Amino acid sequence: MADPILVARHGDTECHLLPALTNRHGLITGATGTGKTITLQSLAESLSKIGVPVFMADIKGDLTGISQVGSLSPKVAGILKERGIEAPEPLACPTTLWDVFGEQGHPVRATVSDMGPLLLSRMLGLNDTQEGVLQLVFKIADDNGLLLLDLKDLRAMLQHVGDNAKTFTTEYGNISAASVGAIQRGLLQIEEQGGDKFFGEPMLDINDFMQTEGGKGVINILAADKLMNSPRLYATFLLWMLSELFETLPEVGDLDKPKLVFFFDEAHLLFKDAPSALIERIELVVRLVRSKGVGVFFVTQNPLDVPETVLGQLGNRVQHALRAFTPRDQKAVKSAAETMRANPGLDIATAITELAVGEALISLLDDKARPGVTQRVFVLPPGSQIGPITPEQRSKLLQNSLVAGVYEKVVDRESAYEKLKGRAAAAPSDPAERTGSLREEAAHAVRRGAGDAAAGAATETATQATGGGWLGDVAGGLLKGSGRKDSILETVAKSAARTIGSTVGREIIRGVLGSILGGAGSRRR
Image 1 (cartoon, helix red, strand yellow):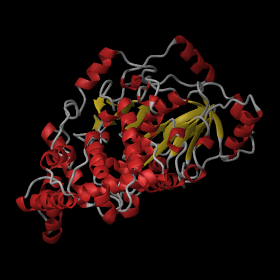
Image 2 (tube, rainbow, N blue to C red):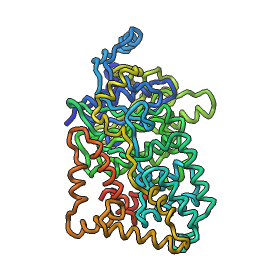
Image 3 (cartoon, rainbow, N blue to C red):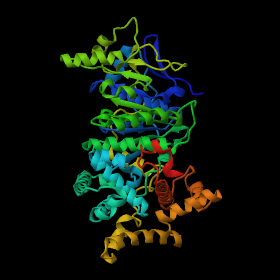
Image 4 (cartoon, one colour):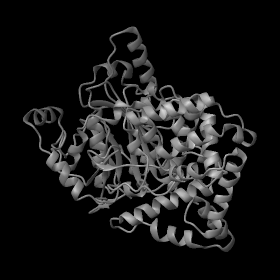
């Protein structure tokens, strides 16, 4: 069993995080400039030392220093001496850099099909009616064997459905031209923000987040300074990754230490203006992902930024200072104090406003999973570098990464855009004939054994009947960790296998969070 992690101390008082209970999740809160980022870096470093991989978003660009050996400035050394804290051992953590835009790290991509209509609706800011139309578009694409891999596929599918709305209305329900137009405008906004770079192949293999080097867990850092310019895109992207973990990983129960710890910075963006149905599903994912060996730590300014239903599941708490300049601020401080376990010898509400930088009120779970009494302590500093790395250091990290060269090259295989574009040139004039020919082509694809989504669905049926088949062989050979870098071909094959799984599961509620309702892993059966 992994030893407890010393997080903070003050005199004889020590606060230890138990690795076995890190999957009971946590919360790091405090006003700007009170030490949240250093606390996050210190926790990530400690988890890496015991072999736990970590994922975190770098909002300000200064978390990359965890990849370099640190050194104390005279000022920091003086503060530590004053607080009775020993200087940390200098060290560096193995680090992989990621970036949705592919500028400051390895590209991160998902297919449109894998993102699903629920999260896409959130990303596009659609209302209920527009979301319903988007779900119909996904359903029609599935029924006709049309792969939705990138935004041009979705655009082509929307145009196809809009142009043939009368034909599809009879079977699928009313399709409003206004709703189709609203979705197209939303896609245009996402493209202008650079979000189109996120959609495509090769798709991210979530297992690449769970690497170790020399017994240390790899720190996965997502460059989010540019991504934060689009808050809804940022929040949806991180929620997709969290949900991918939920869907992909097997049930493992409580382990000696987690398989991965996921830090969700600026967590208030996840819940801001989110519909109640989405919040319910977030709550469900957070509750159930624990049994997959994943710990989730939300990082935000105030505990009240997190809905009570989610807040109640966050067992490990670190509260930095809050400022109370107005009556509203004072009320927020009092409410925040009520979320911590009481300490008879400590006025928590008063202490929250008095905390110095690097000082915190901490309540961690004990060995019986009970919240510990809140203590006023000083967070231990990290041994790695505090602050950003240089462009030269970043370039070296990317070159020596375990996934170097795997995700850099975009692959654009035949999908909905290419098929619909080809049909447009040879389409019959009668709408009914167009619909019939579309379905005949999908059936013909199955007969000729083509490796598209329709063929994948037929193969899956055969696999279930025989207990085997090529898809099982491919999945068995490609999806297991090999401890080496995947080739471009292997990465694309994995992405294709996942996309086929998505099509096979088309009768189940689509989307990342929708899988909870239809059964986890429906897209990777």
